Image (cartoon, rainbow, N blue to C red; front, side, top):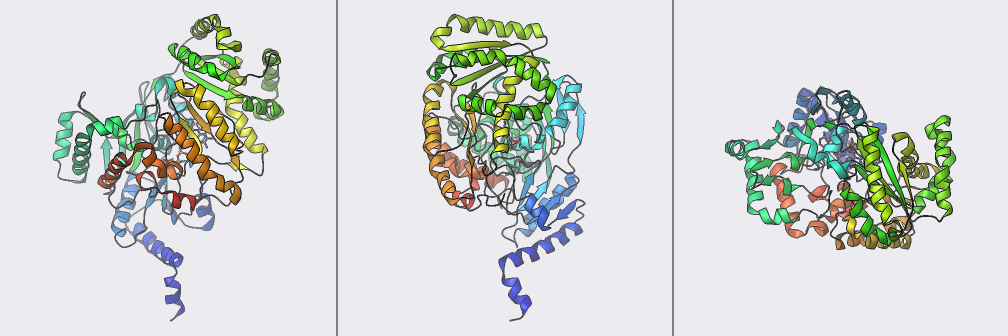
Length: 572
Ligand SMILES: Cc1cc2nc3c(=O)[nH]c(=O)nc-3n(C[C@H](O)[C@H](O)[C@H](O)COP(=O)(O)OP(=O)(O)OC[C@H]3O[C@@H](n4cnc5c(N)ncnc54)[C@H](O)[C@@H]3O)c2cc1C
């Protein structure tokens, strides 16, 4: 046997040969973007912000929608010959669930899909690779905001937000990304770009009559929604935010007669097509904000406090635990570096009253209720009204202190603790890394008094180094332990701890993901979340839209834990 033949038998070599051929064909097809397969690029694209790593076969950076279409068309054709050929979209790569990595051709939208189009006070058109922070600068020029931005707002893109159906601190008042998408352009698995937007029944009938791939998609998805109408509507998790599965229950509404395929694409993790253009609905930006902060000694009182606070319709309702508070105190000098000397001194002075509060006993939870308004007076009035109402019952609620911080500057110290203490902890603990595997659970807030102590017990049982801070108003907690995940003993904790937490969440009728989506970490638990029948419907959706599984395999209805577990990160 000659050396060439021997070499060609090795699967890795075979992959390289196939990729070389693929690159040549793509170039011949007129693809204008970059194609990279050097070791350094592959290393970089092996990771996102999840606890997984997978080496891509190739990384491409399309310049235009035409490039994306050529790529998808070629993949669809070549897939008949090269079985493991697939494409996985990536924008900023901040995905915590492993959605943006794969043994695939990674398609980077963050390099060239960076143009912001027409922006008005009510709508903005943008390409998906635009950083949210840049997008927001433009919308604010028009006094408007896309309010479902995540905590990673300075790092992520608007396209990643669509694919994950992201949410954040303002989702309590405004909802999630799916609620702000007016229209999308999407490249489907036939390699053509389509406009996807809500359709009236009349428009839907016309669409379904088309004798092409698009017509087939609309007809089959509509038939599926009609045939299983009650099952689909009942599948919606009973929480205010969900990113698990496909949001089928919002696609077809018999009462309004609206058929909205954007609801299926948003949150689909790029498993049904590639988003090439977005029209976002915007809301007026209210420039003033302030906080009412409560120091709570008795978690049992949450059951009464939460509904009372929600009656006042706050913009955000966040919380952090005593562990987070201790970390903030321990790392106080590090805030100096983060915010600069002047702001740090201001922070110290403003903390004096809170130091006095702490002398009365360390609270179990700090609750932060934020109100927004057009003027400072409007914010102050909203804070006062709630303060007064809660004040009457203060002893019964065991709130051992309340503080009014009616301006953004005054409330900064609490936001710093809520947002930055975890990042600081992460930067201090050098031998451990973030391990997001129970990072996005959500249960109805009314269960918090029972749920939180049980959750703490599991965190303690597995000796997980984690704080409990999150979106109290939605009952959504991003719990991200710091672990030495490359150590087999630590890795062995993942599955049992995750199972216990997941069982607890599902016992309270919650969802395993409020915002961060399924990816490699939660995709394998779709059956536990939704049951066999609904999982079968998700699989049918995938089959209708991407029968050859070319888009982001191993995610959503194609996920399995063996595959995910075999890609737990080993290199840091
Ligand atoms: C510190 C930190 C805090 C976070 N906080 C939050 C939070 O509060 N709320 C929240 O929702 N998330 C949060 N996340 C997760 C993540 O940042 C968000 O989900 C974000 O919206 C992802 O954007 P991205 O540009 O990084 O997308 P990527 O990570 O690049 O991709 C995300 C997913 O979108 C798909 N995708 C990307 N571009 C396209 C496209 N053009 N077409 C189709 N599919 C595409 C990818 O395949 C992948 O499945 C956090 C992450 C970090 C690291």
